[in-house]
Structure formats: C-alpha cells, structure tokens
Length: 222
Image (tube, rainbow, N blue to C red; front, top):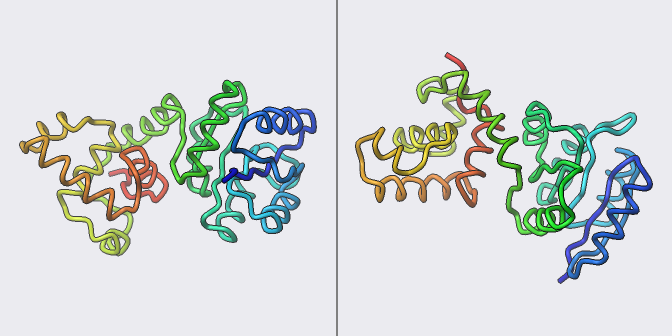
C-alpha cells in the first residue's frame, strides 16, 4: 500500500521539488500541497494523508501551531518536520506539538524518503546531534527521579521507582551497562526493566522513551 503524503511549505519551488522527488520513489504518493497553516489543516482533514511533511516558518500560522491542531484533530497522523532550523528549542517545541520526526532541509533525498517511511510506520525520527542538544539541556538541570512535575501523571503510567530511575538514566543517555553499574544490578535485569518501561509508555524504543520524558516534562530542575 502506498504511503500518502501532504506537503506543507510556503515556497512553491520547494513543494514541487519535494513532490517530484517523492513521486520517483515507489510506495509514496503525494496527495496534496499546502502553502499555509489553515490550508494544511483543511487538506489534512479532507485528504487524510498518512504523513504531513511540515515546514516551521510560514506566514500567519507557523508549523508549531499547525502541528498542535493536527494532533488534536488526527491523533494518528504522522507529522514530519522539514526545516532550516537546527535549534534545539524548535525540536523541543515540535516534539510537544506532536511531531514524530524532525529533519533539516539540507538532508539527503534518501534521508527524507526513509524518514517518511519510518514516521508512517509509527516510528520517531530525530537527528542524533539535535537530540543530544535537547538532552544536554536536561543534563544541565540535574535531572532527579524524586522531583516529578506531577505525581498523578506518573501514577497513571504505573511506573515503579526502579523504572523511573532507569527512565532518568535513559534521558541522560546512559547505556545498559552503565545503568547496571550505577544501580548495582545485572544488564539482564536492566533489559527486563526497559522492556516493561517501553510497554507501559507505549513506545517502540529508548529514543521514543526519552522523547516522551522530555515532551511530558517528567523531570524538572531541583
């Protein structure tokens, strides 16, 4: 089945270039183009695409605002940001707005195609260097397990204290072996906890778990 894509960008030449690129790729069909936020929201509702390829800078209504509306109206829609901005602030805002992926406009064509396929499959796509900068912001806050923004929110997730500790270490970028050493448990035990953690958070991998923790503000500054 072909992946359907809606392209949202205020530059006609870029939209046409992306359309041409994607139509050369088997399994992807561009079903529409929008030059602004309101048009994007209208077409997304009308065309029901699998993925919206979304720019941030647009007149009137920017990509962050568009993503928030799209997420509210179509929770299962895959939103992939394609932008010139490599600022971690934008990455964090788009994560909170419901974007599943974030790419820079200087990305290779194959990267754009692969990202669309991953987002359509429900996966998250964020460049490693950008995510490292986002995580560094949280490292500087000295993330601690005990200072959760909302005890009620954590209770809803049914996470154990050990799972919260491990989630904190995942956000900090630690590997399984490092987590095991820090907690004085075996790597196998760490893996078992992570398996349970991913299931409870309803995410596919460690990256998505970290993105979830960042987007929900689960850990706050002391």
